[in-house]
Length: 108
Image (tube, rainbow, N blue to C red; front, side, top):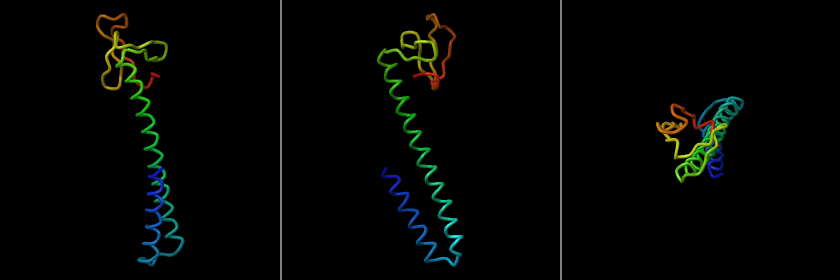
C-alpha cells in the first residue's frame, strides 16, 4: 500500500513540474501524467502479482522440503521420490516415477 502512496506523490510532483517549468498545453500535460500514471499502476499491479506467486511457491517448497505431499495434477510429489531443480520436480532414479519431470506451475 505504501507503493501506491509513493506513486501518487510521484505523479503529483510530475504534474507540478510540468505545470511550472514547461510551456505545454493543458491537454498535453494531462496526457503525459495519464500515461505515467497508467505505467506506474501497471508496475504496481505486476509487482503485487509477482509477490503473491512467490509466496505461494515458497509455501509449496517448504511443504516439499519438510517431507509433506505436494499435489501436481494427479501425482502426489514428495521428497522421497522427487528432487526440486530449475522450477520443476524431477523424479529420482529409484522411484516409480523414474524419468518424470513436473513443472512447478502444475503444483499446489
